Image 1: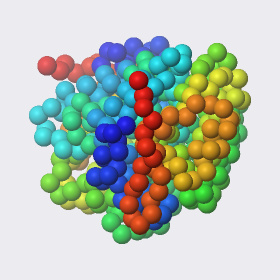
Image 2: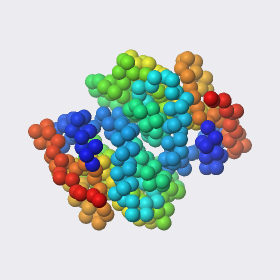
Image 3: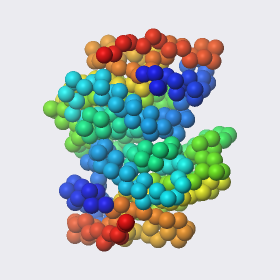
Image 4: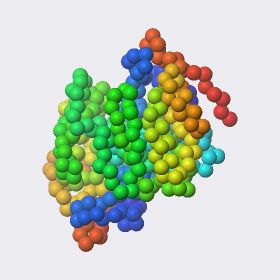
Length: 195
Length: 195
């Protein structure tokens, strides 16, 4: 997605060989028009998948997630993320380890909003180690629903999450795939051609 | 805003005389089309205010906030909320006490994204005790920027936040004002007439 790649080139800050800061348009400040276009692109790529819900994780997944849901005309559900969680009835939980923050979080959703007949599109801002995406897949499976695909805004292809998540067999669509952040420079993988 | 009030009547769950659960369209599952209309309504009500940024707090403020920002053609910034925060350079913080959760959080924004010449519209999902809104006002003041108004999705008018926040002199626009939740029933205040 060229609009996104241009934005990353213009505003992304390479903090290290593994860390790209995109606080100016995705993770802290948010560019609503770009989010709208990202949502449209996800809707386009998954248009034949019979999606009935979009599921993401707070907080940075919400803006792209709500725009994807808007274009698909389905509800968004955002999983809550807590260091500890009092288990309550009707709540599905999964543990997600963050390598960046070196802490384990429990992500959770209410059973009420993901049902057996749902076909769920998972959306997240980043795919790096894949733990968040695997946690979301786990929640959807616990609900007895179907994962219809996984949409990622930025994939760090040099980390192993993409491989781990694709090994589950689900279709992963990343709008910008970063090959490397070496020497302070963002290098993208060549984009797949989409009809 | 009748669309919102109808949704509250249809799907809101009164848990006690002070707690209204709107998890089906605002706080956990999100209705994107309703958020779009809410954003449009905020943009309409504050259209002459020269807004340059929308500021909200993660997580439930993000969906209505990004839609308001979209309609106003300005960026959204969402404040981070942490129980504790390592102070770092270039970060503005404010302490916010949550009566619901009985805990103090530190909300924070980067100085980079709210500047002296900004006119900032604050958006939040609920106005109850007013602590979150007062925290956001404090952040904008620390940044040397101007609060141009405060847009609230649901105000619980029987709690004292509305009074506290209006005493600051800023214009507050609440799209649904709830007079009481007594006897398990939502009673709205009469709506103001808007041109």
